[in-house]
Image 1 (cartoon, rainbow, N blue to C red):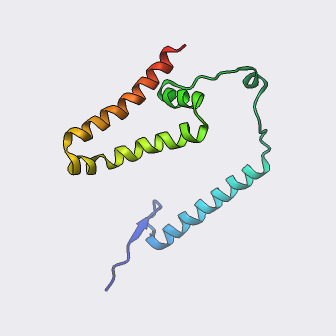
Image 2 (cartoon, rainbow, N blue to C red; image 1 turned 135 degrees about the vertical axis):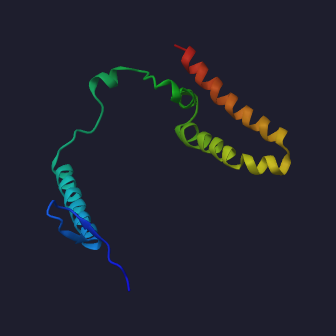
Image 3 (cartoon, rainbow, N blue to C red; image 1 turned 60 degrees about the horizontal axis):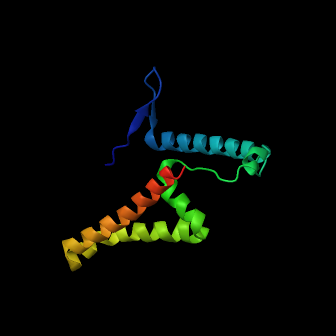
Length: 129
């Protein structure tokens, strides 16, 4: 025999089966999402840059993205914004395997080299003005 779980939702103690309650919540969520979607499609949003943004020739990013912004200044965007961070992430991801395979010292040097590159780029960005 399967025990059906119920949930009390009112002060009188009336109980609603859990499956029905979940169905009601899904229906409410879809209604709210539909209303938000309709509101988003009827609202006109201007696309483009403002006159103030076009007048500036160099926009500074927060310090945490300074290394990437320095790379973007000198390299093509797909290299600086995608390839270099992705290569760094993949190196960090495979670092444990490298340390088991080639020894702990070489993996440590790889980690320090990659971290040093990002720290130097960020420091150069922060100190460059």
